[in-house]
Length: 239
Ligand SMILES: [Zn+2]
Image 1 (cartoon, rainbow, N blue to C red):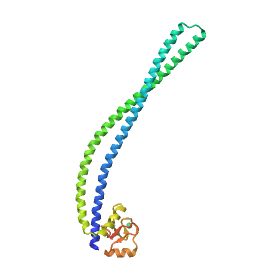
Image 2 (cartoon, rainbow, N blue to C red):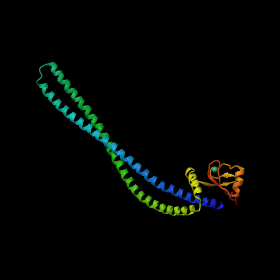
Image 3 (cartoon, protein in one colour):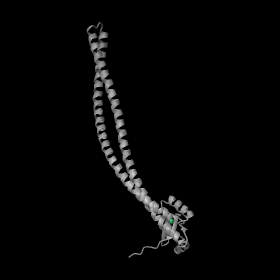
Image 4 (tube, protein in one colour):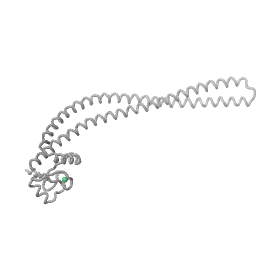
């Protein structure tokens, strides 16, 4: 049993290295994903700005047409004024001309306002596009950097996995299954030391009788609190 405990302790050390490597690998990819998401967000902004810009320009064209129509109407009514017969007709034509002039003024005012907004949007689109382009360049650099790093990490990982397989061979299948299931459920730590009666996985005390048995190192005990496998780990001597 002592031998198997030692093998499990070695296996745990290997698994911790693997855990760290896996975390480092996913960190690299997570950073790339984050950068991609930021760029996508900017691209979506650009699309929204462009849609807005198009609708403003559409509105501007409509207004310009309306103003042209108004100008034609004013001209037409002014001609009619020359040949007017009754005062009532005269007043009505004057009113039409006045309304058309007012509409023209309102339309022109709206166009000025639209032009300001269009200019704003054009600035935003060009700024956002520049930032996007710069970020895409940076992302491409980062991708090749991360890929290189990941390849190096993968090499290390392959080596460690080989070590692990070799080490695991000396451990019974039933024990491996137990170890693996604790590893999966207990954050990558399946076997922990107990120092001065305290489990170093959950920092809770082990019952005294169990601790006494543990000290002998002849049996594998499970921590009653965190359910991890335990072994006796002497306290480090203070110098
Ligand atoms: Zn524990």
